[in-house]
Image (tube, rainbow, N blue to C red; front, side, top):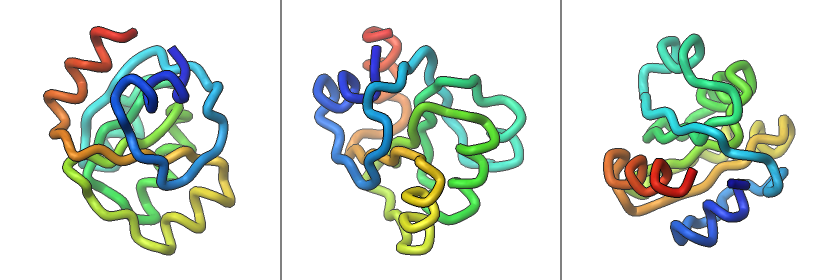
Length: 108
């Protein structure tokens, strides 16, 4: 499954676009950044409400395929600029983490 396919099948909104052909092999839910940094699987879709600059650093270190901000969580401007600079795709959904993770699990 690619990021592009996730966007299409889950009706996700693109906030920052980078490599939409990147493969998504897993899903990870977490908001405690230090926890996510050490545990999120590479090539996963990371579901969070953390739309700040620190989440961009964590996404880069963990090498996730994309960040999905759940429940329409906001992405601040500084984070958006940093994501564009570092090639981090950020998506948005109005769904909560649980229901979105179930759908992702069914797709991958």
